[in-house]
Image 1 (cartoon, rainbow, N blue to C red):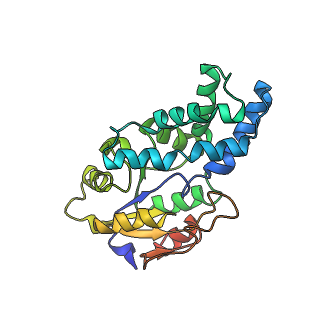
Image 2: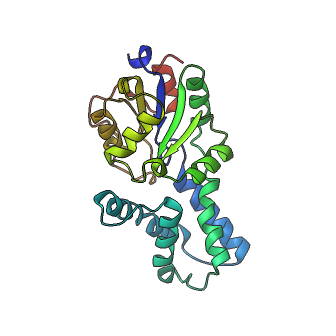
Length: 238
């Protein structure tokens, strides 16, 4: 049981704490109705999101300098608009679509799980999102984080070591990284965190929809395995 030693719990956010896919599917459809624009919005979202990992990998490898998630998703949007008949969107409309990310909702168990954990632990984001985006998402979802840390602090994306080491350092835990825990729905994220001395908590999420097969089971002996954030709280004595 890791609870006795842990002081700071870091959280991956997109997928782990917030349900970006369902939220954005709904928000894009609402945008289409309001703007009287017809498009296959679920397919657009899938194509838009598909640029996420390749762009981050380019930064991690050094092939591109760091640029934040806001810039990344705007760049990717412009790459796929023609495919969906959206090439005539105005810059204002593009910004409206981009900023739908700020309105994504938490998973149903997230607020209760975080609230319970916050009574005993310091809760901090450790996300590839930008500082502005994570601040807005936390406020929108009433997520009780004590601090917002993101890839911008390290100017590189997870799973680059600097992303984790910067977060550990900024929370004053360099000498005791084992008192930090990362909670995530991605096994690769937890493997990287463990390599820097952090404890780990895994929960599966269907962030890509009901047919998702990846990351539906732990791929290592993570310190905590639960089905939702309430389960993580219970495992941590909250």
